[in-house]
Image (tube, rainbow, N blue to C red; front, top):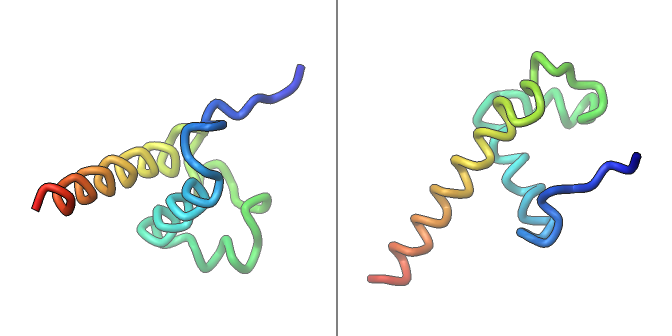
Length: 74
């Protein structure tokens, strides 16, 4: 069975990557990711799929969308 990316087509990969790094910075794990790579991070550090990283990415996307709407309405 092949793995399908459920986010495919919703946002550009570069935007998702930016959100992922922003959340990693907020969680204080970006320096470890830079030195060890994502593949060497434990699930406890990143949270399970949809956990700390995924949930925080959604919150970050919502915050950015609200900021963007506020800027355009001014």
